[in-house]
Image (cartoon, rainbow, N blue to C red; front, side, top):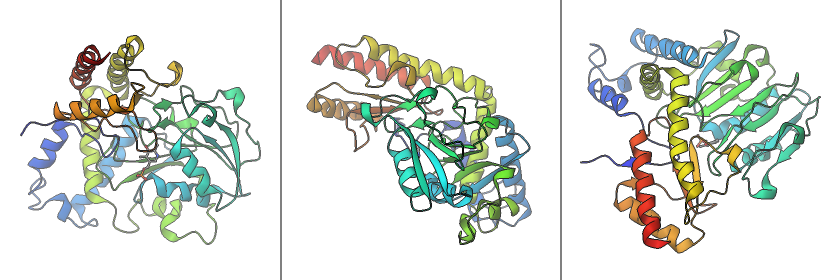
Length: 359
Ligand SMILES: *Cc1c(COP(=O)(O)O)cnc(C)c1O
């Protein structure tokens, strides 16, 4: 059966060579006589896998030595609670709300302390990212939380905010590995893996060492980042198979030329779509040009029936999951690392034809 161009926001496409390698190794991983799925996480073979995956992630992202990499579960959504549990010392934190996930993160943090809304882009339905001058930061906050790429609204921070001595915490679920980031500018980066890294079930947390050890005393053991750091993410059974697939994805990224090369490819793909949208007489994107996401492009026709027809016709033609998030409607093309340039080119061709038929 023919594979489709899958524009899902997550779980999303994985590179075909990764799926092929995983398939080839499914029954017998490197002569071990078993699948990685069947392996003890305490075995020597698995120890080799998890150690090398962490090493590869450090290398690909340029993670400095004074940062720990944690392989956790519970999704990015569990980090909405773990961030305040692990970082609130005085009980005050700044949140910038630029969409649904950052809003949920702020709401969750209110259970643990005082949340200062440092800025919000709700006034314009989250179609932009506030500028540095607009951030009302509290110098005494324990941390500042942002969502770097807003998966639902299709916006991205085009700068890393300066938060002085206050650690910056970023939800990077939908942009991690899409381009290089200066990790040293962040105190904590976390991401659910199912967008750009691996299958669902793994959450990656990258945390600066000096921020560990401040968890509230009643923090559940499993929610304390220090437990994970002290036990090399092996306090309990980690999401073994997802970590293994992340390793295959990192090998694939290295073959593409690393994150600089991914950025070029991703910028080109996004540009194909946005430049079409800019001149289209039917489709338009609500996002301010300087805040457009490289990973999730949102657009509408302005007519809900036409939007629905577009989603139906694209799906029939092999472009699936283009329907926008249920909370906002319209369309969204998620074009993560694994979406080939050809998929975007063909989608744009389809959109042109649809426009001619309906404009
Ligand atoms: C998908 C996503 C989430 C939610 O991730 P889960 O792993 O499902 O909890 C949170 N934040 C962002 C930016 C996302 O894209």
